[in-house]
Image (tube, rainbow, N blue to C red; front, side, top):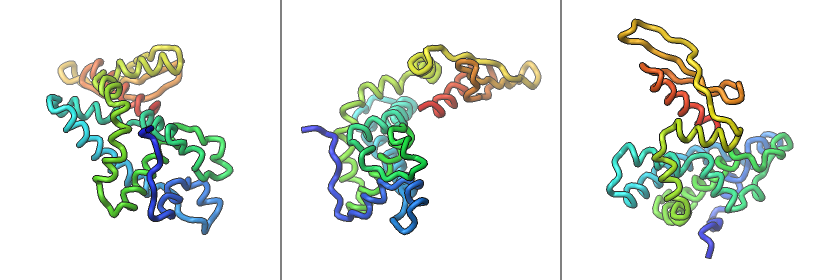
Length: 220
């Protein structure tokens, strides 16, 4: 039996709200609330549940490693994968302006978070049923996500840039200020000459790492 299935809802209005994008609600007033509040709730729940999951599964890992692994386990790309495995795109109610974005990673990630928020409310504000629901999904990807999370941001960005753009990122020093003993560098990532994230650090390397992290947040 597949671990990817939609949960049963006692309150169908919560399920409907979870699948209602703001574009639909704005175009169809009176047809129900959109899912942004549920998305907020689901994001918080997934952060907690994934943290507890990794804490139990990897008792030998330290805080920094667990934090990186959690970020990889519930990042946009991963939650989008879960959403696609559940065929959430078929259930989404979108306005005309957003209908062409049905396969958008950002939209699907948000829909999955809203689903989790709605399910949490449907089961009486209880974490355990939600944990029982998502844990089998985590099990299918955790080893890959763990390895991904343990890579530093510059390595992850290089892999992402090569995969998506066929090019490695460039790190450009935008400015530097301060005396030699306390210099501060501002670095910008550029891919195909397009500017992405910026980072600030007390060394060029630290600023590059910060810029890579900011760029990953934009691309994932």
